Length: 294
Image 1 (cartoon, rainbow, N blue to C red):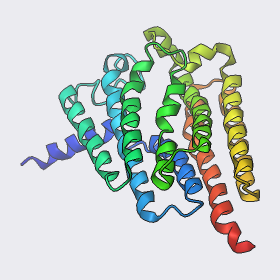
Image 2 (image 1 turned 90 degrees about the vertical axis):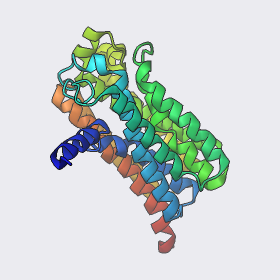
Image 3 (image 1 turned 135 degrees about the horizontal axis):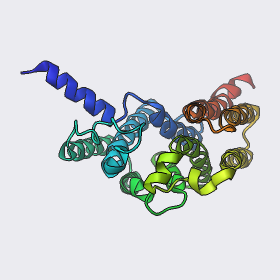
């Protein structure tokens, strides 16, 4: 058995699933954790939390494989993506599809202990993950569709805890859509020239010279909707401080993207981890720490 060849193949699979670039997992995970903590009033339980953490990582990995499969003919013409394992021919399309199916099945096994509503929503989540890459062919702002796909852990989390999906969950999903348009437009600004040449549709192209203003507007909408949720649920200072911290982070992103430098736009995209983390920390403080201070 050639262990060197096996290690090389596993490394290619890791890159195909983007496990070497965990920012995507974090961008899916933060809104899911927001929802879990809100739905469970700050006490979601460790087993349920781990189910959603691992499920998020697995579904993001499956989504990346499907994305590379769908974009394999485009990726070879883009400097940033031309060396991805699938488009470079280092992993076959058959291997990629088998790996995507295996990872999706593993994610499905995780939710077996949960209720029927979660299973039904999981079917929709898989459809969203599989179909998203193809929306770049016809949707002017495919990032909005990405926001639905990336945020579908929100209704699933509420369903797992409460066996229903209340209005606040859909409002939170709307906030996540706005946030996703913001950060993925920053990402799309990196590849705008290549996407124009290849005929791929992105929000960075659709917004044109108003791209920076649109990004900041989307940050504002996301924070505004979350503030409405906080007021409705009567959250206090901890949550508000988290939102203010996220707003400061968004302003920092403006300083990075306003000149439209590719490297700075990519840095702004990656930095969105801290935007999501700030909101989550605010929730934890409000729901778990504040009661002990009363």
